[in-house]
Image (cartoon, rainbow, N blue to C red; front, side, top):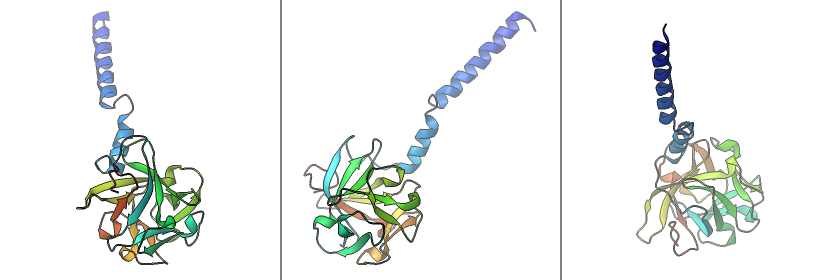
Length: 203
């Protein structure tokens, strides 16, 4: 092969490699695809680096999630039978740096909720004793719409792509939460309301 042919082949290979690099976003595309799958193309629920305080999660039947004992537990962690919001029904949401992913912190013990194993469970589902958010403490709040009073409706997605379920739409003190749902139904819908008057979660 002569020099000219070799140069032509080298240029062709370089062009192909450059095109491949661009199509992969310089090595970022695979992460973007994973991220898009996690977010399910939901609208962004908040501004970056925003913390929302005093948030409550209300089921389709009107019950509120309770962090039993204010948090810090690995058994009897969540009840869903509260009919009004007190301190155990309030949570802080800490933005985790991308899309609508938050760590959910109790407002009494200041521990974080953990989806055990990252989700996919029907027993030993949630702990409330984490002292800092890692992957199992990160939840994607999938925006489903807004109620007439401005309160947002969300599904809560775990890091492995499952959704939290309020068994029976709430009203329970045992077998209260599952994390194995693969699609969003009414048992997976929560109205999220926070203290901030400007919160996209309502308030």
